[in-house]
Length: 102
Image 1 (tube, one colour):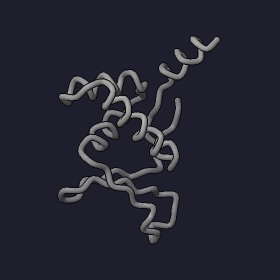
Image 2 (cartoon, rainbow, N blue to C red):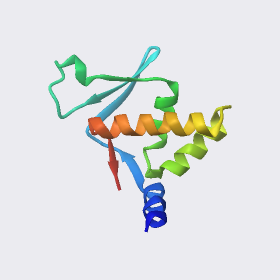
Image 3 (cartoon, rainbow, N blue to C red):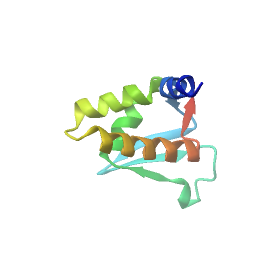
């Protein structure tokens, strides 16, 4: 039972929420939720280079395992760092509603 749950979680697929606009402005990449009051500055989120790459990759449904492999292929780092960074990124985007499970 525990093994099945772990496999199911790894196979979950995610996609970006279309209610968020993604823009590159000069040296910054931002996410803006279009369903909230845009005057609220805490509703504008900035992404670093890694976050922007992941956001672009999430235009199509992807699992954490696929995203992890993408990061390992693109960046020279170890799997522990990639896993921790990816988990934090995904948790934050899910918390603000920027990602959806499919």
